[in-house]
Length: 163
Image 1 (spheres, rainbow, N blue to C red):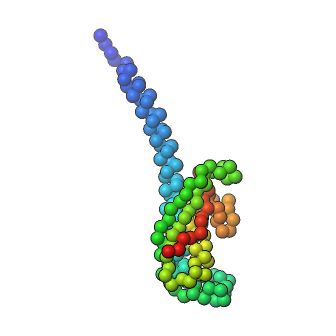
Image 2 (cartoon, rainbow, N blue to C red):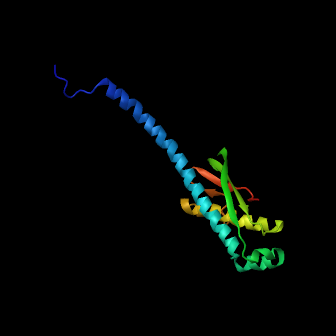
Image 3 (tube, rainbow, N blue to C red):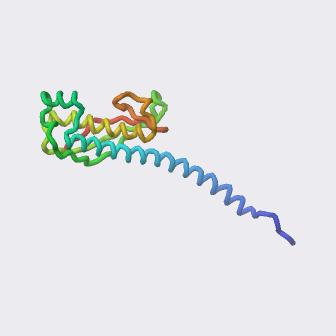
């Protein structure tokens, strides 16, 4: 009895089950990859914002504002990013995307309480900016990059938590 040119039922079942499972896993990994890339971009942006705060590099109008309201910000300091995490708020019908809120924790022992909010705003700005640049969505948002967009997510930021 010749069996050339025939495939076994086991092979057909194996391919019929494994192929859809692999496709399902790929879709799941794709979602996680996008969120991981966005979080990495947010980390880079937060670090850039903290470095700019640490070096006291400001545009002229911000520098002039700081002389009166936040003179400590015009001097170098040591701003350190402690942690960046996120909270998933689920699907948002306004944006037709899943809403993610970034929560950044930072530390700077030399800052007064009044200095922390403007410094935190800069850290948040650069975190959102990096996400927008990564996904090429800068034209879809405002000048503060709030919110920032990716293909599946919309990113907002909570106030920086200072410890």
